[in-house]
Length: 126
Image (cartoon, rainbow, N blue to C red):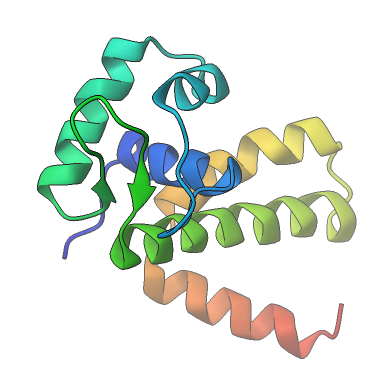
């Protein structure tokens, strides 16, 4: 599977952040609030994510993640948290700025580059 768009990654990340799993559902209104988007935008994104096997949602029901969706969303969230922590605690960037920049970086970095960066960071015993 190719990498999803930044927007679709943000939706999966938001669902995980809201506590969504393969067993625990979240409401579309909560996703809209979390991302600051309209319910129509959430509906459109969920249609794509359903068609591609990342979420399950009965007609007008709450959203649960598939195994693939949870794995992908948790991975994006982990990247975000690691990058934010690195930028703020290691490099000394203001926490709000680190949060914003980590959000950009989490989508831009390839899986291969992130894995190598992560392996390097782990050698530092931070």
